[in-house]
Length: 427
Image (tube, rainbow, N blue to C red; front, side, top):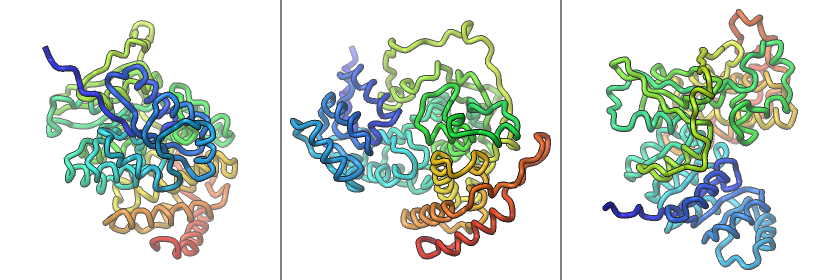
């Protein structure tokens, strides 16, 4: 009779986000398998306080001292440490009693804590794709040097991870990432010109935070996942394909050199990849979830992505092929463009225009260390904030090629780049 699996101690970065909430719900269902030792969150103190009362972690991190004071007031009997500011996520990521760190902070904020977790020898369940987009070479090199595992939580990469199990990478012909297509799959270019913030936040399949929901609508999320897949599985960009699969039943596929294609299928629920990453190599009995019923699901459909209407996908491939600091610039420019769209400063079609303009104005430099990447990140953010709204040229008819940016957008980006030299690398 085999011994019971050892209970794993978990440090969670991004406790109050959608992945964090799903992770803690899983922990509650399997208290014999997991315990929470540290939580990092931002400003959602009300939810965090409830999590602290339920899980009693030894360490908690919040955005600033104001949030820390509010948290102390909400959990007066809490005996653990409460940290505020930048040191908090680093302390959570390197907690001495954590066996595994789940990194689910949104955007580039997760980079330094995730690297710190790896450097301290901890396995990382990675839900933050931007970590590998910005610093894939640094992160994967550090993981190899420390002998730690990076376990993908994104449903697509988790699916590939499962489909690769027991196989050799030299037998892989290509990886096929699936995408739902987002809420605008059947929109024309004219329709896209009228998209509002509220429209873009209505994802047809997944319940996610606002930033990733917008990225899904533009297909930038899939582009970032292409870059993430390159670093996770050491596969060249020309061997990573994207296919639109609106039903979100097949989460990704691996094609092997003999023509066989292995896929991972399940109902769209993030609990499944979270559980596989945290319990790996075991599988947990997720009997509370709805199971996949193929006759009920009906037909499964697949179409090629329309790169004319969704240029963000090609921008991501372009950044990956350029290498060096360009993926960091892509990510930072996109984060700012999405922030500005959510603040209703930009239109929907301005998002790829801003990203393209910033990339056009950047000459990549070697990503030799974290400082170089953070400098490129700062420069790109400052530049993206200066690109004016409406910089995109009018979209062509749907059967014509999409121009990248207008001359005005490029001039604006170049001017912004010149002004931003003092804060980062020069383009």
